[in-house]
Image 1: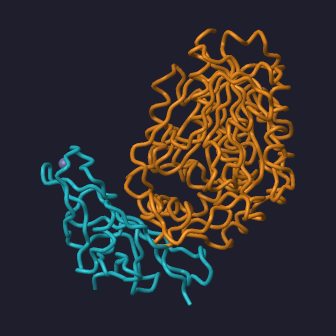
Image 2 (image 1 turned 90 degrees about the vertical axis):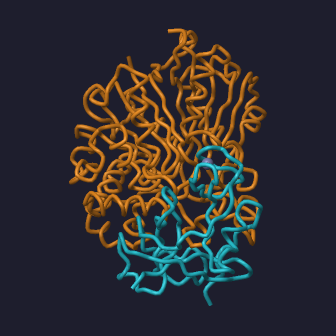
Image 3 (image 1 turned 120 degrees about the vertical axis):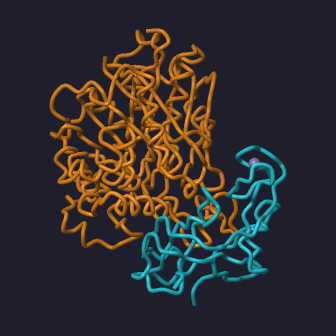
Length: 387
Length: 134
Ligand SMILES: [Zn+2]
């Protein structure tokens, strides 16, 4: 059990839109819930990891850094890491797994706090200073009003339709499935008020074809905390540990328009090279759905279906329903339960593997889950097991 | 009035690309050692790491690799809809440009359409837009 890493406590604050609660307090709420579940106290936490670290120039995106958490929670940290330059959001949890496997830390608090809705309501404090020029990667897209990642993902989705015949009716199942699950998730109440129907989906306002309003996640205010513990520290833990059985990441080129295939294909293939488990063992899928097309890249990339067959795989929504062969985004995903930015997928995978899903708990005895994050050139995947 | 396009901040690497239109040139960085192109532009070749690189005026024609019709006004008073496309440049393997397809109704723009560059100048920047080859 040494040299293994486990997710122990998980916690999440209220998820809302323009929450008055300060993002540091949202982080505290999630951290308290996570350490309580693990049976730990803040004294036992000795590492703090995050993605992407504090975004000083754009606090709404990431208002809280690892320094803030160490300072405010009184943590005596041996190692910390908060960085944007990692394969994707869930890589922070992967890095924590490394730290505990190395014996550097015993219990690492990993967190992602977002304040993108509240921040827009308080631009002076939380939004970037307007600039009259664009530089870095955005100079290759924003001069053509490809301003949002919606426009970038839309082009991958459109090409999938053109090449493989994916339809909007098929794509719509991601958001519809998310809304059904979100209706059973008490923490999604501020995001999803009613179940989405195919009729409503098909008549929704278009953002960037083929993506409509329901294909894009919604700015939210929330914090999610995941505690990663060393295999030889489990005697200190009260909850059922969930093993990080494998992890993978991929950044081929840091560019949304120079790559042929999103990085999910490489990261998906690579995940299985680190484990004896196979794609056939997976009971639950929690796939990043900041935009509805992205789970399709993960379905294909991880090998649940052939490249180009993702649309057919989700057709009608029965396969990905809670009682289907591959329950997908059982919390509602980001489309249904808010833009938690990646960490929500690990949180929900652990919740389901422990049977703590309440009204949305999938049937059976799930033992293996895949949680992913990222889109376009960024990708990270975690294989989580109860074994 | 339509808002001005976001303006790239010129630097050593990107200036030939964003100002080449002044001479009607679509400049892409080419390596004189291995012959490959590097885009986005860098001070070295991303294929062989040679420093013998220089902007080369490419044909300025290409095909639409993928595209989206954008309906969301990302800036105040931005006219919609319009086409955002990824153009695969003729003779420049592996290089794509995100751009707009102009001078055609959006419903007439399709995957695989042949297009050519047309520059739109504003404040010293020559934005490489593309139009269908009729
Ligand atoms: Zn070269």
